[in-house]
Image (cartoon, rainbow over all chains, first blue to last red; front, side, top):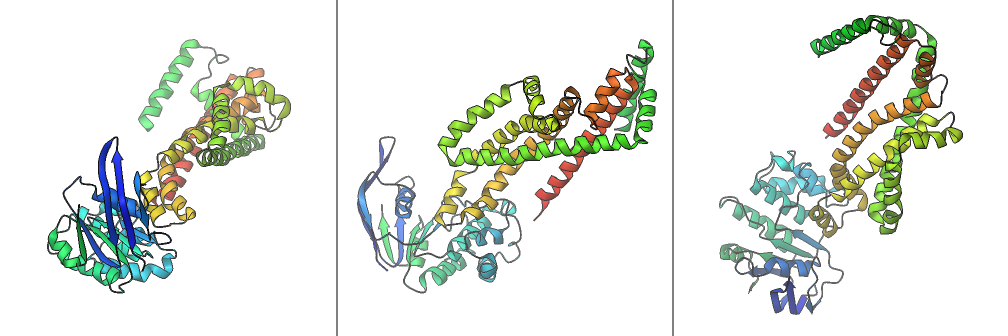
Length: 194
Length: 238
């Protein structure tokens, strides 16, 4: 998989610089983006995703790559079930139904997959958002604080699930934003501090 | 519900007794007696059928065209610039102005035309507002995951627009009914409720006027309830 290379990326909002001349390379495998709140991690991730345009700088290697993303907010269809939310991003609901159920079961949501997203707790919604990102067909997976709101008992199983689905083949690029060094240790790969 | 209805019937009875002239205000007993007598005739039901199909046709045309125009206005700025002011103008023109012109062109389908022209702007504005109220974060999510336009429409737009459209349709159906019958009355459309109302008025049959009015209110209430029932079921579907 061709790495994604960012060179001298800068971005400002309302005259306030958020990112200044950031250069980094995202090879296959995991990369953890770390740093204090408000430093521009999400902005950088959204630039990589193509959702935000940088003011200056260049990015190469992202062309033709399919993206999957866990947003900072869950962005679920609140009126749909957990299962329906996961299947929403698949091209064929019937074909992917078993895989979606298996992911939700692995995420500890076997008994909640038919509940509407609006009825789920914050941690459950986060897991649904993660299952949705994992079922999509992607080359680049961006996770913006994917384990936020998960209790310490649930977290290791969910990290293992990400490793199993996103990293087992070794040909996908994973960019994970986290504050937690423990999460970065568990995912492995390179770490970038902003 | 029943005690409230009884209270207002008593008020009506009191006013009719105080006026003391059936030609000015018919008593509830006289009005219901005439309604019962009219309901025994085939013409009464043919008139109801005649009005119902013309007005409902106008309503459903307004529903379809209002939605199509709203979608077009969201999709294209040019369509918005052309259509939005035109619909606003239609909305501002009084019903009477439309009727006096339309009566020459839509003699038999005047009620359909009037119901359409009165309801379409309501459907258009509400649908447009509903589409505009769609959460951009969800649309961005769908775009990132390359979700098809059909699926985005079904899972995001329809769910967001439905409450706006339902309230517009609920208001619109009452307006279609009232304006359609007014148009029938002005156009003296035979074999319709408005035509029956006009004939009763011209012959000073006040009890008949009241009987037709009761029938209009009852039908309007029934249609409103039926409509609510269908759409509540639709909304509750999994």
